[in-house]
Amino acid sequence: MNSDSIPSNAKSPGQGFESDPRWLLVQRIAASRGFLNSPRLSALLLHVCRQALLGNESSLNERSIGETVFQRSSGYDPQVDNIVRSHASRLRFRLREYFTIEGALDPWRVNIPRGSYVPSFEKVEPEPAAMTPLPSELDAALVEPDSPVTPKPSRHRLSRTWGLLFVFAAGAIAAAAILSFPKFHSFLQQTPSHKLWSQLFRSDRDTIIVPADSSLVIARLMVGHSIRLPEYAGGAYRQAPDCNKPCDLAMVHTVEELRYTSLSDLEFAVSVGRVPEAIANRTVIRFARDLEIKDLKESNLILAGSQEADPWLSVIAGQMNFVLHDHDDPIGALRVENKKPRAGEKSEYPYDPHDPQNRGLATIAFLPNLSGTGNMLVVQGFTLAGTQAAAEFVTNRENFDRYFQSYAGPASALPHFEILLATMDVNGMASRPIVLACHTSP
Image (tube, rainbow, N blue to C red; front, side):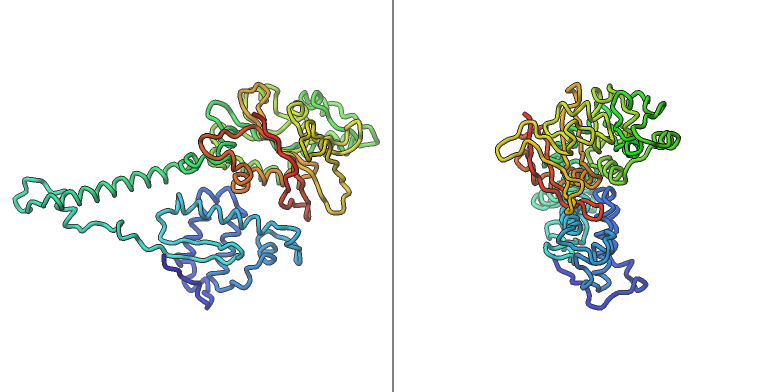
């Protein structure tokens, strides 16, 4: 490989920048399958590469990227909010993945070295063995044997020519297979994340993605009590609102009729729906109030939010080891119960909504569905940022594979599991979570 350094003099976008082969490469990557479902990674890639190609490498530091790409406030603390570092790590992984599959034949490479946000570009020189054979050799191999104008090639030349043709044919078939089937590489690697999503997306049943019902949370604040599943599933709570404190019944009715959900839940739904293992014609997004008990028995499910925002979680809670207890808990304390604590674990993890450090708790549960014929994934937290942290943990393939690396390879099945996370809210957004406990089931 020959390294092409970024020119020190900045290029103007009107002076050939848009036709620069390195910028064209970056645009191809941003439009590739692996980046289409990650708009933040695409934005990060385009920003750092544009600035580097324009000669503005000095502006590529963590704080400026956080403010420009991730809309962080001026002067935010990158030591507390590590969104740039976490996305840069994911970006490096996606770039390696791109050049292994879709960009394997691209004459250029781009890399973002660890410890830096300045990309480096390299031009790949073709290997000598991959050079096209001389036209005379191909002509000699393909000409009709009874042609009077063609000398008879030697046996050595024929064997060499057919050998080259075989190599080219095999290479073309292999390249076509890899480029035509994006799942091929993941299938061979048998990564834990591939196993997870392959069990959640199957051709023999629907996968239902269920964002939280945020309008239900607003209604609870207005009426002074939570809505339990019998009233929620049948719609009775919307027919006759019941207030435990003075409230405007007409406004409560209006709110309960709305179908509000959070942006973080929608981002999670979009990310999940675009994983390579997803099956488009068997994937649906359904609002929580439209679920039925048969869905929890017959389908695979992916649910986001707490029991306050999705009463259906009360049906699943009996299967969980880590259980979130909300405002209606008889004890009256917000906490995560650990039903079967192991060595070094607590039986309860309290949550303080007034914690000045904005620390939170969230859980991820990969469980069988109610009939045991399918699977479900539940991500929930006491806050939107907590749920977001859990969602990002399970959809970050690099981090997920690293955590469950003992289950990589074709000989190891990914078991059902539950994870308890400690989170931190930074300006309403989630920072990198810390795993407090993890339980797996045979």
